[in-house]
Image (cartoon, rainbow, N blue to C red):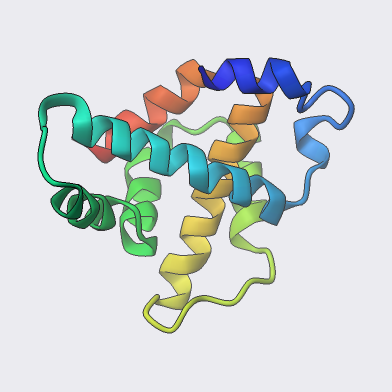
Amino acid sequence: MLDTFIEEFEVGKKVPPSQYSPLALAYLGDVVYELFVRTYLLKDLNMPVQKLHKAAITMVNAKAQSDLYQKIKDILTEEETAVYKRGRNTNSHPPKNADLIDYKSATGIEALIGYLYLKGDSERILELMRNLII
């Protein structure tokens, strides 16, 4: 379904994914990341939305995203590492409840996911995101 959105809006065709700002990539990557988590949580569970939300919060936060980077850093390509670093090194301000290092790493992960999404590389996104749940 995500590929349908890319095709419908021709995102990534007029402007190559590498030319989007790191924060624009992270903006999009955040949604793709959260959609993966929410879909994963619904896979085997049918519980009240409040419980689903609490479960999602444990996986969709700066610390969890930073931990994901630690799990996948050795399998990233040079290109993916460069996108991650662009996102990580961008000038952004963490919320009060987030550690600065975790927040920057999370922004890098979100930028990477957004980049892969714009490239239409759903398989790679899934490959990387599966590391979140193992």
